[in-house]
Image (cartoon, rainbow, N blue to C red; front, top):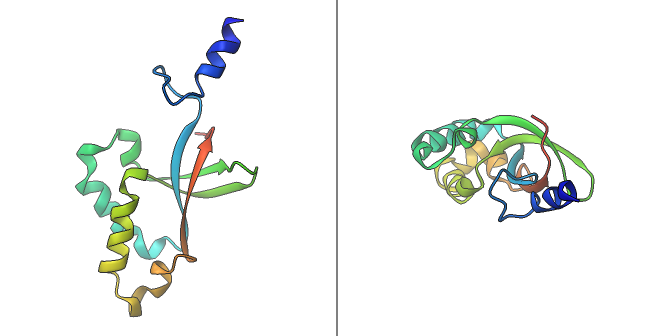
Length: 115
């Protein structure tokens, strides 16, 4: 019926009335060494972001394979700039762990998020 059609439509990227599934970027691992970089990037690019994207918050998501993941929600559009800043602004001697891809990872997850 009508409800089933609306439920299926809400999973589409073209749905205009609020998505049921959202694509997010999650920062996980050793993020404390790069916390100032994340905040400064958010402040600088704030005009381009939604209110929800400007608020860094801890989230828990379920990955496509069913595994849970906890981390800090971060605007996907700013990931390339964050990676560049980590590589250029953090000296390897003082923050080797922060620049190490195995120490700080990003995940893309598409699914329902608890709020």
